Image 1 (cartoon, rainbow, N blue to C red):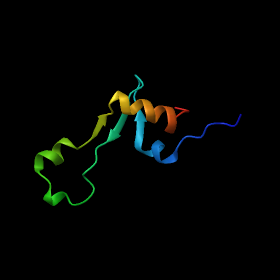
Image 2 (cartoon, rainbow, N blue to C red):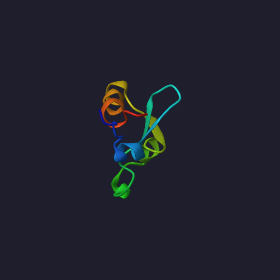
Image 3 (cartoon, rainbow, N blue to C red):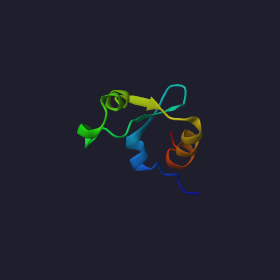
Image 4 (cartoon, one colour):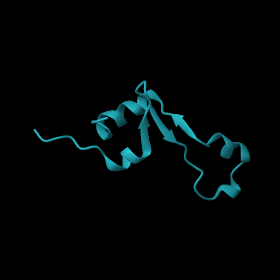
Length: 66
């Protein structure tokens, strides 16, 4: 059986924490930010921990090798 490949785009977008959860960068900050509320821009800074139901599929199909 061949090796399973890690999806390269997922490899760049998600990081695993020490406890196995997935971190990701928030959307809506790359362009057109002048029309967005200041509170939205503040809350989307940094990284967030992904919901477990979404993280399960990403770990299974896109990041099988860790």
